Image (tube, rainbow, N blue to C red; front, side, top):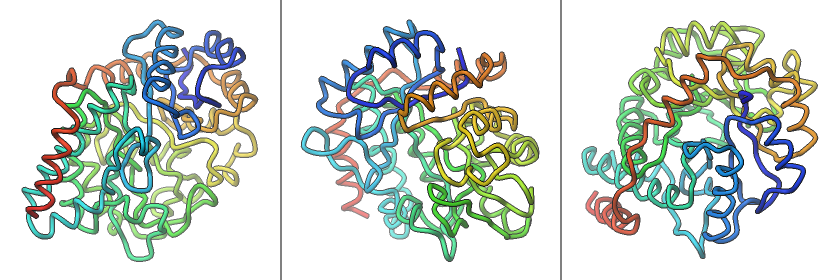
Length: 338
């Protein structure tokens, strides 16, 4: 097994993908809109990935946050609200907002687990800050780090009850980023003292099963390397100050934020860089076959500690129970009351 999560090109495995994945044994996969057609097709795809791996607890990820970041959409799947909706409800009735966030996430988890998707890249714990780039925007719960932590916890609990593993992101915080890290490397010049605010939600949810790094340069902590590539930030801030000791994956290797970093001129260099820095898993999303083969060839087998964290993360979610529509109705009623 190699320490990578890979994307796929289409709605079913190609012969070349099947051969590469059988040989390389990536730790898991991530689905995007290009991989989605009907519920029956998605279930067949996830079944084929599990059959290939022989692992019933195989991590199959998706970004199903609600709002503008949703890979599953009508007519086959319902719309879910953006995280900011729960932050706005919090301003009126905090406990009701938490209950709504929990019901919403449980509905999401039930929907995903029914499709064979075992991991949702949610919740975002990025605290909104002045000048924040809209790549985060309404994907954040809001400006109060304690509110972000509470709604993040409710979301994690709901996903778990729905049988789905949650991922906190983007550790140690994307809220101060003024650029889209898909396109360029954001640089945050806030002091270490100022950054303490950003760390609050991650500290409170340090027991989350998985976390995803931010491709952001924080000059207070490392003047050269972004968080995903910085041994200093991963060891001292993420593992140290925050206290996160579960599975840590990089954000997507294909994002241009990594292009100007050391080793960033190749996918192999990026993959080796994030693993050397202390990430347990390198995430490669595009489904580009040549790039996946390059990453697979570059990576050594997954280490014992990372493998133990992976297995622990996949044992975290409860067996799914209930009806997703019922919990969505409960969410709507709670939001209406707020």
